[in-house]
Structures are given as C-alpha cells and as structure tokens.
Length: 330
Length: 294
Image (cartoon, rainbow over all chains, first blue to last red; front, side, top):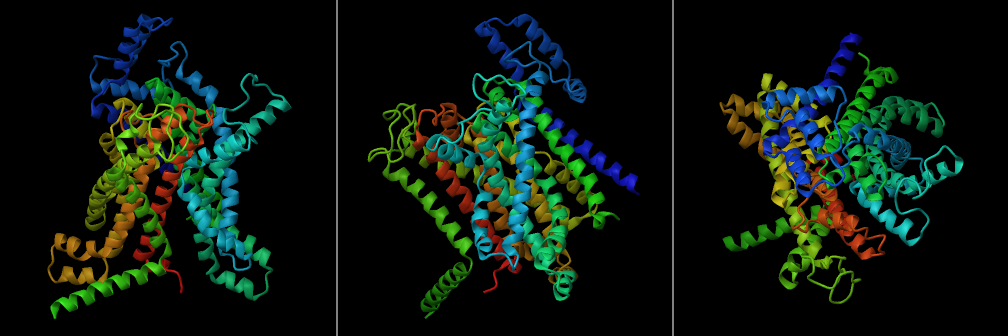
C-alpha cells in the first residue's frame, strides 16, 4: 500500500519533468525558429572576437544533430538532459552551462529557501491571528493590507524597496550579492556583507509571500475553529494560548504545507525576477543575462534546473506530509 | 405606460446594483480603481500626444513638470505617453490571452466534467501534470526562441499555457452542477447534453466564470510583464513590462531618476490590486457563503 503510493508519487514526478522538457523542446520548434543556428551565424558574421568560431559551430552542429530528423534530435536532447549535459554557453564559449549554473545556484538556494521559510512562518502566524477571537483588534484590521500585498508581484515590491531603502535612505546596498571588489571568502566580514546585500531581495520575497500564506492560513483556521473539539476544549477551560497553538495552529499548519508545495513554482518564478531586479548573482540574473545574449543553452539549462527544483520539492513534500500528518495516511 | 415601467425597472436595477456594491466593497473599490486607470489611459489617447512614447520625441532625463507630467527617460521617451499607451497594450494582452485561456480551458473543463469517462481521466492527468510545471519558465524558452515578441505574439504565447487553471476549476464546478436537481430534471425531460450545458449549467456558472476571467486576465498580465521585464518583449511597443525593462536596463536608480522607476511601478500596482479586488468581489458574488455577515 505504502510502496504503491510512493511509486505513484515518483511516477508523477517523472511525468512532470518529462512534460516540461518535452514542452521546452517542441514548443519553440512548433513556432518554427532555430535560435541556435541563427545565433551562431550572427556570431560568425561579426567575426566573433577571440573565440574559435570553427570549433564552436562544429561543437553545436554535432550537439544539435542538425540534419537529423526531428525525432532523433528529440531523443538525443532527452539523453543530454538525463545526463545533466547542457553543453557550452554561446556567449562565453569554452565555459559550460553547468559551470555557470554551479556559480549561481548557491546564491539562489540561500536566498529563496531562507525567504520562503521566514515568509511561511510569519504569514501563517499572522493569518491565524487575523481571525483569532482573542487576538488584538489590530490583527483583524491588518487583513486588507495583507491581501493587497499578496496581489503585488514580488519584483515590483522589490523595485519599490530599492527606491526607498537603498536609494533614498541609503540603509542597504542597491544590488549585487556582495560588494564590488570584495573576494568571496569564509570570513565574518564577508558573511556580514552578504547578509546586508540579501536583506532587501529577501524582504521583497517575504513581504509579498506573507500575503499568500496569511490568506490561506486564515481560511484554514476559520475551519478549525468551527470544529467540535475546539468548542469542547474551550468549554473544559483550556487556556487561550494553548488552544491557539496546540489546537488551532497544530491542525491548520499541515494542510498549509500542501499549499506550500503547490505555490512553490510561483515563488521560484517570482524569486527569479527579484534576482534580476537586484542584480543578485543567482540563477535569475544568469537567466536574464543569457536572454540578453540569446544564449539558448544557458536559458534551457537554467529553466530545466528550476523546473526540477520545483518538482523535487513537491515530491519531498508529498512523501513527508503523510509522515507528519496521520490524517493523510490511509 | 410601458416606457414608465421600463424606466422604473431600469432605476430599480441601478438601485439594486448600487445597493449590492455597497455591501461588496472590494468589488466597488476594485472597479473604481480599474475604471479610473483605464479611463485615464484611454482619455490620454485623445487629449495627449501618446506617440511621444517613441525614443527621442522629448528632452531626455527630465523630471516631472507641467509639460511632462511623469518626466522622461534617458532615451527621450515621454513616460506619461509610455504608460498611457502601455496600460492599453498590456491590458489588451491580458484580455486576449486570458480570454483564450478561459475559452480553451472552459471547453476542456465542460467536456471533462460533464461527460466523464476516459476523456475526463486524460484531460485531468494532463492538466494536473502541466499545472505543476512553472509556466513562466517554459514561456521563457518559447519567447527566447521566437525572439522579440510584439504584443499580439506575446498574448498568443501566454495563451499556450493559460488554459490549465480554468480547465481544472471549471471541471470541478461542472462536476458539482452535473448532479444538481434541476439538471437531473432537465435530463429526465429529455434534454440533450448541449441544451443542458448551455441552458442549465452555463447560466448558473456565469458569476464564477466572470471571476475565473479576471483571474486569467490578471495572471496573463503578470506573465507578460514578467517576460517583458526579462527582455523578451518587443523593443518598439511601449508595454508596461517594456517600460520596466528599459528602466532596469539603463539602471534608472543608479542615475537617480526616481520618476522613471515609480511611474511603471505605480501603474502596475494599481492594475494588479484593482484586478485582485474585482476577483475577490466576484468570488463573493459567485459564492454567497463568502458574503460578509452584515
């Protein structure tokens, strides 16, 4: 029973990844352009500077199997993806896509994970307090503000934050992951610099995501508060704080985790644009730069890694949730 | 006689609508914000020279003044003209992509929910799998393959994946209504599936479909602005996303040009918040259980 369930989850995961890669392959071709061939001929026309054009275009031709049928191109594309082989960057030729992504990935994971967890904690607590009868009135009045925050895209909020806190007040740096000129090293000063630079991008993700969590938690707590066991606990004299955390939050937080998995894709895309706005040296900025250079392989690699991240986190969530929540076993 | 009855009816409908709007403040405030924004943008097309969205049409890098209400950028675009034109273009993208998404998704949802069987199983599986794929990222691949996307192209690219959420939501609504008493009655009276779908189920879903439509439009605008901010829009069309892109590309903040930053942001915030409030209001209309207890 349990094994069968795991099998179902894993095959769903594989299906999602497969669907995404297949869309990535066929949708552009459906529209009928060959971006890589165009890009290479454009580079060849301009002379290409110090890059060895002959070797480069040869490498791409072999890689793309130009001249082969669409079907065999598709199969070799799937094979490359399965081996995490995304080829070389077009803009900086001898560098592979994987090398570029390896530099960017830690920044993205660090920023996104921390911001998501903080937003989840604050948002859930805030959302519960807005409908909790014993909470101060101010929380109930907060609801419209939270709703409005949730409607604004992350990066728009980010631009606003830069304008206020970096440009006008000068409290935080305007962008980047660390000061220009500083060399990444494991020292206390550098860590402090990194933290200062991560503050505003993190804050814009947190502020916008708080609204999403708070709204969902609000709905969940309303349902839980209507349950008989809460009425009973209240009647037998359980203290309000205990009632709030052990009866209310405890029962509402787990369904909230399911939605965390479902909204994770939106958070990732939102965070990509936040990185662009702040010039944060993660995958989002890498994606932005590669779009500027029409560096198709890097674009494909970054998109695949992000899709995989979303799918993996959903798989983990689906596997872990029944362990945490006895109501989901069955 | 009949004329007076008509005016009476018309007034009473107006009074009823107004009365409902007062009980549903998010619908009221959202609609007012939306009409004010779009109205300003449309009126500007008649009383202002919106062709100044083109580069080199005014003095570059001017702060807001009497002649240039929102200032100009380093390329010599009049920012008021840009956002007036951009609001119309971006809303157009949203309406086309959202409309197509709702049309395709709604058709699939009705087929899937009403007829059931293996068709339903297939559609449901495809929608579930595709919903997990972050749409914007797949669209980045498509858009970067096509190159610069004019507003119409942008609308169609976004519509490629915009049907997933409407399909799922409408399917579940149809599933509920399919077994409702009045639908059973119609079926027993010998109505065919098309009569039932168009005469019985569809009219009952109208408020819900309206809410789905505003969600779809808002999501399409979000996607288009995101793609354009990443540099995938057309350099010749002054959509709101392109204004954001130019502003980031030329580091408006480093130059201290706050008006260049705040103009597109303010317009986008008004647009998204108003669409959100309208959706919330329509949800309340569609689902009376959400109505506030007076």
